[in-house]
Image 1 (cartoon, rainbow, N blue to C red):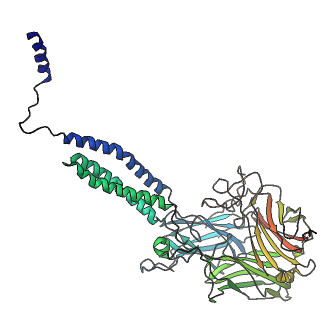
Image 2: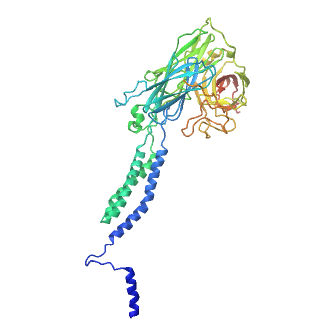
Image 3: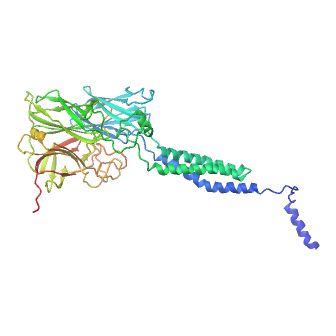
Length: 579
């Protein structure tokens, strides 16, 4: 018995004295239970907190950046025929306000050298007097010195706030204005709910753990825990709804832009509707002269057909605010881009090299309205003048497809079948190298007029023609597909018709990319501009001639910073009748 007691005493010596319990005060197991509950909640809610923080970070990273565009977005390209200069003005994307607006001006072959003044002015109205105080005041100016050789000339101006703006270009004779929008990074109500919900959930996770560890009663953890569940419910609901809720109307694209609307389009949006269309427009054409051998200063005044008010809601369409097509007596085509000089007023210079009739048509797009092509009811009748001199290039084009040489470049047109009512594929090979440059956002343009007499004066026949059409290439047809962002994209095609001070950069990028194709941006990135010379040489168009007869056709493409205009006279046969 003594032998068995000895080990026990030896063990008790090393184990130390036994804990002394007070009578009537049993050990409380709740404290250890709370510790286990806190650890369990921490292990369970840590992944939730990680998910919440990751979701918020992804939403911040993928939020769209502000941009300068006529309707808000990426880079905007606007062609401007300013005096004798055919310019392409590119407003680069703005990454934040206040911040810099980079402006590039592309010049073409034959552009005279000289200075071009630039200025930016905020416009638009606001319910806040402080927000609207800067409207109409010049914020920044710059001067670009254009050289005699084609190239890119750049300037940087500061923009100070989001909202509607105007960029003015002054060549000393005329001031052109280009409206554009500097948008603001906007968070939708659903996204705001997701942000707040996940932020609250993150804070409540810590509160729940702290309460679980420190509280004397375990049920107290239900208070922050319930709030945590509510915050997560709101956050997840907002995240799911953020991608499915309809967007507010596009400021400057569907509705007239205001300062308040750009800064908070959800607050400014009215009842949701799918139709933002506006009435058709009318066009008044005025000319300061009608004498051949002189330059006619044309003034175009589009107005609303319903109210008669000046049309000041024209937006950038196919790389210009307005496209003017004029066909001279001998068949010469002018594709010009009148500049906006005031609300509902556009001006452009049109040379009248010979006496006869000049048919005039204008194409533009209204905000929320779509494309409109208006033909002047009168055109211009140029009377003989002392300086009249018909040019050899104005001679009518010979009938049929085949080869033409324009500005030293051989252009070959093929059209296997031209039958009325059937889609025809017209393929033009412009030169022999893939060095075409985009113009007006397209690789090629096709102007169609007809049916008309093949022997009558072209200008007069064009005025009476049943059809005017302006089609675009399906996309370049070289070795692949490329754009400014470096990724493939969908080819662009479309038809618009009307019944009845810095050193220049290189004008073209000679390096051929691995793949070239259409120009239309597929994911909001900016399309290739005129500095990219890697398209072609084949340019294809798809067009359906509505009736049999002869048609005047002009192909247009840009190569070596020169706009090539190639005339053709095509005969379209009637469809065979099935007995």
